[in-house]
Image: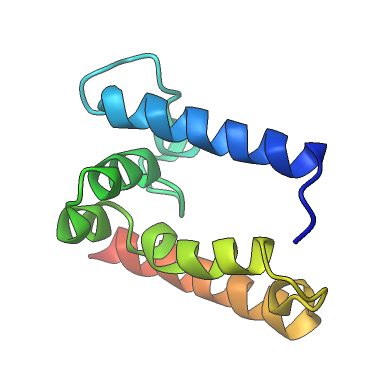
Length: 115
């Protein structure tokens, strides 16, 4: 992967966001955004719990992070690998990949609100 300004900026944004999450627990600090979908409907969206899950993961609590948001934590490694892959092929940008992700996200959202 060629290192250019865009890659450096992306890295700095991720590093800054990770540092912010590491030092400020989303469950204790109110400056993090609230989920609009949850506020309006009372149902959890696919991203609900993502900040708490990432916070727990940054602190090494893998099981706790999976309880907060299984989808984000389990798919993150694949997204990161895909983002920084050397070859130009991306499974997530194919029609099958997009459809698969869409179906998984919808099923996850339905199941998490039924349980």
